[in-house]
Image (cartoon, rainbow, N blue to C red; front, top):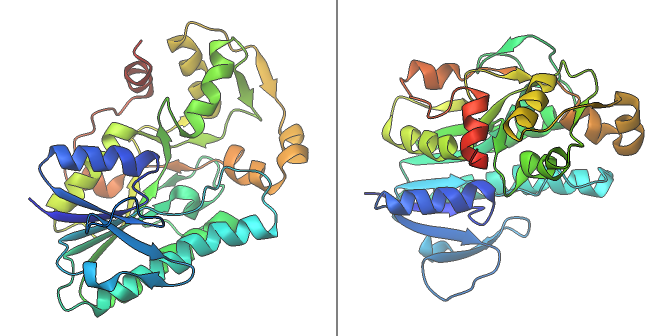
Length: 300
């Protein structure tokens, strides 16, 4: 049983992960911006102002760093993009530096990242050895991952989780799609040929647990299911699970006019990613195919 510190514990992944690891018997503490109690289970920090309660940081076995400003809120103006970048890069570097300075360092630092690292790559099959793409999110992900270098140099095992689309009916991209699809208003976005690399929330927690238990794993990890699908196939599959039609197409130019750069990088980019390291480490996916995953999530 491990003593684990988690940042971003109130988010989609963090809340599910905290409950999952607690059920496994691990002791969970949270790195928070606002404390609700005066216990060591909540450690106060401000990554932008670079303030943290150092006296509580000692003796953790594992630190899981998931915090970062949402990328899905519009518009992507200069201030919003700076917040997206700084919350990830500055926060990760500050935390890594503080962990590196500890007398009793954690064995493992697991940091969030994203498949945005690869950018818009069409049908190219991408694994952890593929080079970075071009664009705002690519730049953010590269700097985000590099920000953990102080911990790595201090001898801490570091992994970066390159998350694909995390499927949940409560939060995230799927949750935003569901009201339209349930009303029969689901649409194929753009050409529909752009690939979606997805993963279930259940597999995310199991993958993190697998990384904790597999000391050979380090560096970037693609946290995606083995079978990415084109957007049109994703839409048809979701509609089929909900017993609804897909009769609309939302042209790319409308999205570009409405959302600009955000549409190009989040909705229209094609990122066909495979989890090469997870497969090589013998991780067994709970859901490797999309339709069973959606039926489980939506209880159909």
